Image 1: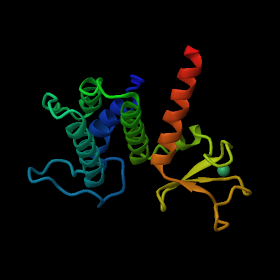
Image 2: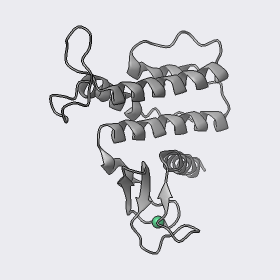
Image 3: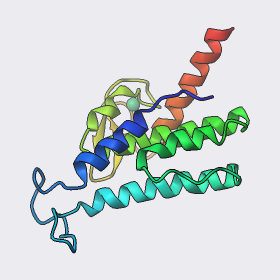
Image 4: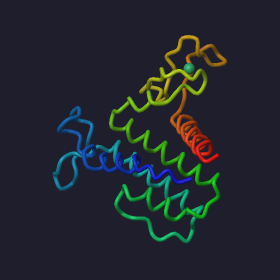
Length: 178
Ligand SMILES: [Zn+2]
């Protein structure tokens, strides 16, 4: 399954172009000055981008050890991963798309766009009342009756939301072809 969705790539490009130097818009003192005295850099965004790239490379190395070298442009990484793993079975391609979709969510969260969470139904109760708890870095359900086994508000990591989303997409595609 290749959804061809380039949301992850375009968000990564936005991060690279507009969020690495946040001091013009963000709170002061959160960046560090570069040696050349240029604008301070947002280490959080840089670390996030590096971690995402490392995760993609790690998967690609395992699934496609003969792949051509990864592109240096940060947002080219997803197309490169897809192009070099077309031979994988459907299950592994679905796992790949789940990682890409999760990273797209992570990019949105990194730029403060928490609205992306609301586009996902709660995995437990199915309501559209999920919201982002930044301190816990998890999506929480606003349905007061939607509680976990300990009687606490149901919360979900981005991996779970991505898994549910890609599975729904796959099921919808299968229904469309029957
Ligand atoms: Zn719920």
